Length: 515
Image (tube, rainbow, N blue to C red; front, side, top):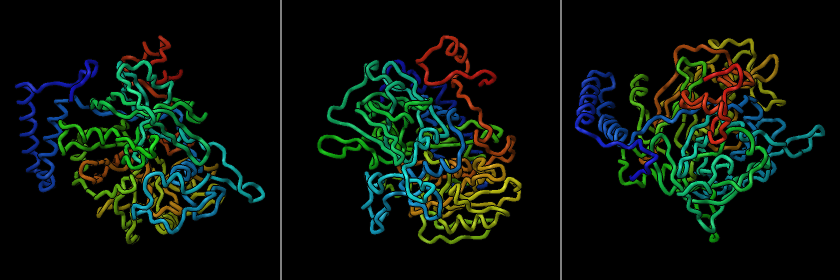
C-alpha cells in the first residue's frame, strides 16, 4: 500500500523497533501463560502479533468517536428513527405506524429480501391524527439521532470530515459543503453512476459518485467510492455531521448505473482487498462509552484489536458467525436473561447496528423485562415502555442478550434512555415490532467492546461496563455528555476558533465550555 506524502504515518520497521516489538511480544507471551484464559490467549497470540506489526508499519491509531452536538435524547423520535430506518410495523399501539406492511410471504433469511428491499417494503411513516386517521409524519430529526461522529480525511490535500460510522448501512456519502470534491486533485468522477438514500419521513440525500483517497485511523484507502450529495433535505443540510460512512456489507449499497444496481465496495471491503493487509487484520472494532464512565473516550480501530481492553475484561472473546446475506451483521441470539431467569428465544437472531440508538428486541423478551420493573408500563402516547423516575438504578433488573452462545449484560443505566415527562423515563429497550430479528443499537453496544471481523464473517465481543459511574441519569440533553464538539488535537482549538476557519470539520466550543 503506497501512501501519498501527506499521509506520512507509514513507517518502516527498523532494528530498534523490531527489538522493541520482540520484547513486547515476549512480555505478552509470558503474561498469557499466567492468564486464566490461557487457551484463548494462545489462539489470539499470533493474531495480536500480526496486528501489532501492521500497526507499526502503517502507523494505525484509534479513531475517536465524539458526541454529536446536535444529538438530543427523545424516546419517541428515536423509535421513529428506527421505524424509518428499517420499515418496522409496530406491534404495539401508538401514533406511529407504516402505511404499507411488509409482505408476510417474504422471508428475511432466505436471500429473497436482499439489496434494496428495505426501501421497498413500505411507502412512508404515518402518524394518527386526532380523529384516529393516518397523516404524514413530519421530519423526525433523522440526522440528529446519530450519537457519535468520527473524523475521516478525504481527498488530496486531505479534507477533514465528520461522519457517522454506521454498521447498518453501506454508503459513504458526504454533504457538498463538508467535502469539496473539486478541490481534491485525486477525485475521479465515476460516470453514469448515482445514488439516493430516502427515509420514510421524506428526508433524502442523492448525488454523484467518484473515487478518492480516504484515511481512517491511519489506514489509507485509495480509489474508495465517495458519494457526494447534490441534493439534500433540510434535515441533512444542518448541523455538524458531514455525512455517513457505512460499515455494513456492500449488498445494501445504493449506487446505481445505467444498467441498474451497481453496489460499490465499502472501505472495509477495500481494506480487505489490499495485499498488504493480513487476514488477521481484516476487521474493525468499536468501544462506546457514556460520560457517566470515568474514561468516556469512545473510539473505533481499523485493522487491529485493542488488546489491553480485551485483557481488562478478564474474559475470552465470544465469537458469533455472521450471516451477511442481507447485508447486515446478523448473528444467532437465541436467548435472553432477566435477573438470571432465561427467556428462551428459539431460532432468534439479532443485528448489531451502530446507527440505531435504542435496543429493539422481541415483544416476548421486552414484556418480560418491564414486568420486572415496579411501576413500569407501556404508553400508547409515547409508543414505548416508560420507567417511573422513582425507580432506583440498583433496583432495575439485569438484562442480558445473547451473541451466539454467550449472553452479555446491558448496563442498567442504559435501560433508562431519556426523559418522557415529569414522572417517567423512556426506556432504552423497546419492541422490535414486525422485524424478525433484534436490532442491538447503542443501548447494547455501550456495554461491550465489539469486534467486527468482516474477513472471517464473525462478530466478537467482550464485556465493557465501567464499575464506577459518575454522572446523572439521561435527560433530553443526553446522558451528561458535553454538548460541544472539540478538536481532536486540542492544541489547535484556539487557532481554529480565532481564525474563524471554515475548513475544519469541527465547531468551536461555545462560551462556558471547553475540551
